[in-house]
Image 1 (tube, rainbow over the protein chains, first blue to last red):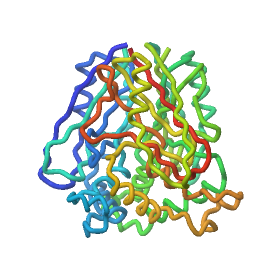
Image 2: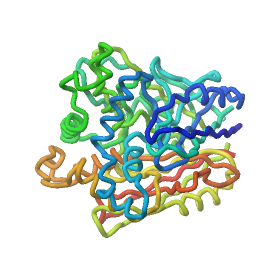
Image 3: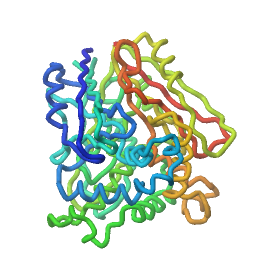
Image 4: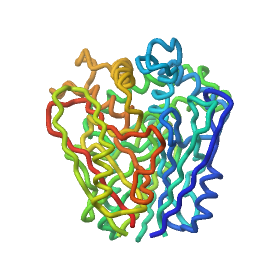
Length: 139
Length: 139
Length: 139
């Protein structure tokens, strides 16, 4: 069994954003030399997300509106987490809905994906340096 | 390390449905010959889900009502994704709540499950052919 | 490839609670002797959760209030699952939002985590014995 590790770094200029990282994950698989196995891709921060969906601009607008409805940012005072001096309690809740991680199959050296599957980094408390971990195991 | 890959195909007659696929996943483990490892089961489409819960009819009625409350299908015009000519933005959101994938342990050749755990395929935009990927690694 | 399996047992005195199990998962990794690989940590019950977030008391208060808003426990009669004599339909829905499982990377024998990542057991129907499965594969 072989394993490989790579970090992806982000410093996004807005509080919330979605970034397609599919090509970065495939690049990590390529450098690993692993042909059959699994790749774990996870946010290393608890106010960010990694998830799989369609790369369609309208959908990103829909997620932004929908997450604000389910877990509104403001008023900040509605959350006890924000009593600590933070203002990002909503980011913890939004990331909970979108998910911390994805595990994907690697087959013949490629991400084994359906036609529209793309991997996204979801940022919910940006304007700082944050990381995603890519861990690959297989042969 | 060994690996094994199998696809499960669906073409469900309704827009939304839940299908218990536990026996299909165990059959894939059986044909792999893998005794200790992990199995990844994921929807290959971004308007469908794979998740683990109880196989109880009332609960499926509850999910349907609950998901419609959190991410209603209609009016279709409430979602920017539907400006593209699609009508399935709600399916992308519902699948986000229910999850794309599950990873399960394989111990002594069997799904290593608690007493009520069952694997489901959740369809949120049916009436077309769609797939689930089963990828198994182990020894 | 090596594999290792451990169960964690809980019998929590309240219906809902969050327990930090990070040290228990690391202890299972230590006893496995695995240095590079993946660890799956999953609730073996469908009314409980395993997830990763920040160990901050205010946040736990926020989750409790937020989950009650998205999937209220009462009235019990609002859920068809409860027609079976159960009163825990809300626990199935809350666990769906929080997630059944997490998969984490193991690097140099340690959980490969960002600065605030902690693993939690989320109980949504306690006052009974319940289990979490830790399954580790690697080398």
